[in-house]
Length: 350
Image 1 (cartoon, one colour):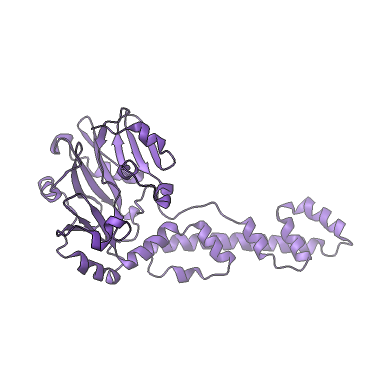
Image 2 (spheres, rainbow, N blue to C red; image 1 turned 90 degrees about the horizontal axis):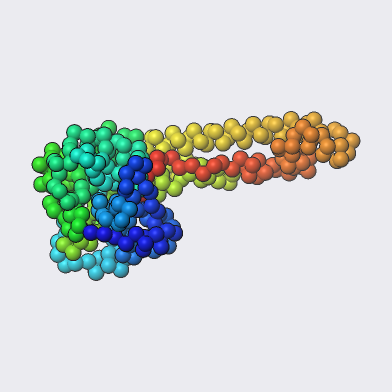
């Protein structure tokens, strides 16, 4: 089956393409503006790591974009199909999408052929060869290992957990549990419950339980995430160096935001906080030194000439001290850091 690449490229504002570094392959992945604007249509919903060749032939078909319960009209509980869905645990890692080069098995992630997660997944699957898998099907995994931790702590596990097996031509799925058993792989665990009961359970889930995924016979998938997981995930995936800088600048206690976060994230925040505070204190001391050098000069002109000659970098702060102003805001503006997040790229954050 082919997909119209011209239509995908018309949506370049919302769909990113990454060409393989060596092969005639392209990954198509919707971006943050697509999610922010809700620009979902028949093309953007398919680009959750879709792999094609340069002619538009679909090489590997991942999940279509699926939504939280109640997020869209057809995911409201009163609009869901009446049947009992297949429910599985939701695993907190990176989506791995299987493709082949000759008889070798490779995994990509949602937006990259060579992300750290893709490299780990490919290494994990190297004991297999293409002929071990059903021809014409795309195998999807959740890639988990300690360095790829987002919120849930999997206690050192390193594996690719089978999530689904999708017919590449049609998008129809077969029983992934049977395939996992045949291949000797772990798979997403089935949950015997109802949607209603799981919704009641979400507020009581711990940070080591992401939530659940429900799949209906018509192909509809919905996700349900625990309240604590949502809180921590939003914090971890959005709390940047700018967030830390903003807290310090406004005299907010960063620790109030960090209840229950993983140790690795806490260490990252603590180190960045110290780095910013040390830089602030360094600039403040330098400004005081400059102030002491010029405060007794006879007039403002003499002071200005000395400041601009020897202390141009922090001149506004020294002038602020001369005018008996609080220079904290001046220094924090000067120290605004480069935007940086605490996690590796290509983590599935939605």
